Length: 132
Image (tube, rainbow, N blue to C red; front, side):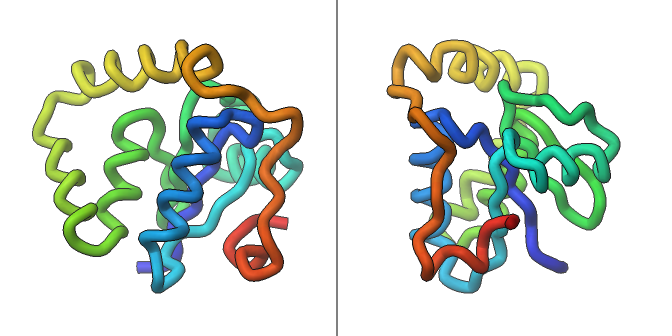
């Protein structure tokens, strides 16, 4: 399996925290990241057959297929080492129920987590893990 692309809201504090969490727990570099607002992020959405503006969801692209909302997040956890990989088992919960929770968090994320003024800028060490 190739690398998994994680597209996230670059100005969302929760989303940026999630990216930091993933980078720290993905020592093999299986995950690559891109901001949904970036040109390369919008191009990746288009290549996956999605509209080029999807700010309310994390989008995960694996082998040319796009996964959104809770399914996308759980696919990311499946790429992490143990014990984080165990969270992927939440796929047994019916998707409509998972997505209700996901959408509620997404709807309130700017109120709960302070938005950033600009998109996340990777450190020089992280640069290879981000879309240009």
